Image 1 (cartoon, rainbow, N blue to C red):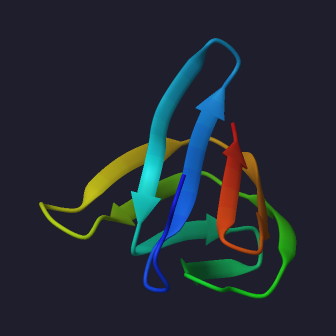
Image 2 (image 1 turned 60 degrees about the vertical axis):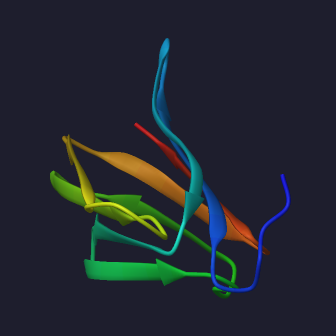
Length: 84
């Protein structure tokens, strides 16, 4: 997937289900140590997530929200993966 400098590839998935898979401008997540926002070219990070809501902003259209109970975020280079 080609991405420009203002977006990154985001996947939000659990066993048997992909909730989001595409280009995002930002993703705000309920990190175990507090809320965090991922943008394009974010520093590499691996962290646990607590119960809350993930808010994904795409280049166009309204923000999408996903309720979660827990998960893991892994972010590197121009991609981020959330495993629920």
